[in-house]
Image (cartoon, rainbow, N blue to C red; front, side):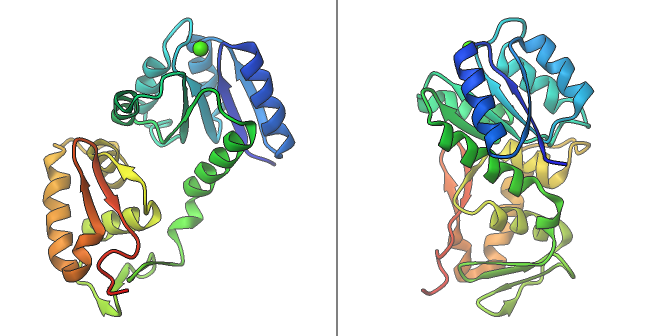
Length: 231
Ligand code: CA
């Protein structure tokens, strides 16, 4: 069965355009126009991905997002936020609330489908298997093996998980909150400083490769493929 994409958007034209294009791309689509009803439907239908408008009647998009992130069952649901406002502040605000990606209105249907496809691919569990090479880094989910330019890295489980997460999301800014949630897990109660401590240790262990983990001021971290790999 194809993947179920849920769409919460109160503007009818956008909703129908999105639905039409997502269905044409092979997805099943359920759409709602209201934040509160939408949230109830997400819990009831358990979609594979949610496309969420920020300005909604009922509950706002950010309120919906907060509810979803507070529930173990939906904490890791991929969420693509639609926003009419393009300022950097809004993006950061959304990242803090745990959106996985953003699309600023007006957007092209083709861009929407591409983002949805990318998010779903990233969310699939099998991505944790096999090996992945990014720049000088190779991570192998089994048996938890990581190498930098051929040199085996001696990592703790958590350091490995963090490095693998960076590698799978190369080029993307990851907030400390998101890293805590996705690498440490939803039942972990801790401070974002924990992330900084682990990043520092990872950088030391990576040596030259440490530069690949960039600090993005005020936002979090970004793994840059090709940085420090001697290429
Ligand atoms: Ca709206």
